[in-house]
Image (cartoon, rainbow, N blue to C red; front, side, top):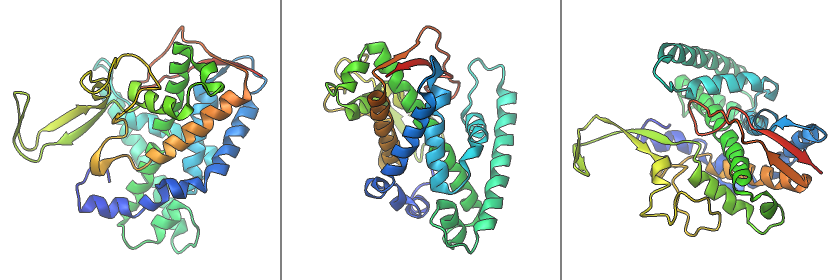
Length: 311
């Protein structure tokens, strides 16, 4: 889906796009709220916890797992696969290991979903795997790829959106203002997406020769578009290096643009809005420890974020 142009792109995306429309997802809001409260119940009473492991990872993994129709109790395995698939070398010394682990994750995920699809063939469930297993619109390779993409994209970027939101609010001292409603939570989410976009770059292939700012690009060249840089372009954003939730307009491209605009954007926004409002409503004090931040290797996010919450 993410690597083909129309009309193939429309065929693959159209198969499932209705399930990720805002109107359809509103029906799932009560379930996301329920899952959020359950995770907050587990956190409550802990003097100190890792926001990433205890909240930002499990919520989106459980949500996408339920939509797909797979057991969320394997979420540790899903995270391992996801991390391996997006890992990048930071200094060029571990490229072979990263490639080896990525291939292993792809193979394991492929076998896992192929078995599930076979089990659901002829079924009448409403989950996305059953939908894929019973349609004649997709080949078997496309069915497996569809499941792998949704599991990956449906959890890891939202994990970093949630983590980066708490990071920004702590860094800017805005936690209380969001709790009281002085700063709108939805505007915070949009500014986090601009300021610390979980996906910083996307690769594209040039379809024809073109000159861009004096640089010759040949047909077939791979071009990396830096979303993170575009989202801090001073020609489009006033004071782009400042975190300002009130900025209008906020025309960030954290979810991409055009026909490949992120299919899961409405779900990510919904989960982030529910999660942040519930967290700040539950606890009178939310403090994050920013003294020893460890960045991820593949996405813009953190390995961990120690937090303290108090009612």
